[in-house]
Length: 102
Image (cartoon, rainbow, N blue to C red; front, side, top):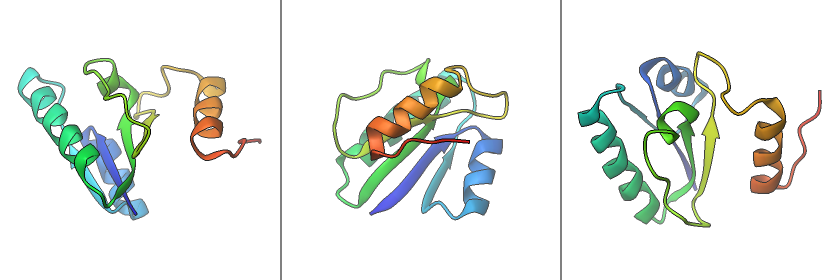
């Protein structure tokens, strides 16, 4: 299963360097938000995608599909987490069954 990332150019670069399978970069414009919605829909429909990471800022601008697979996780961008550390830990715990500790 592949990991796909949807984010701004800095987030995308970081995940490319980390070895994510498929990384897509978008700007915060109405046209790019439409492109992001279309790409997300395409990724959800594919059988080879297991996890989709999308920046919190972009999630606030689009509606996430209600699916159980692939797993869709929100990640912070360069400006930090809008959800807070505890919320991120809970999302990871529910998604993969592992509790993050310091």
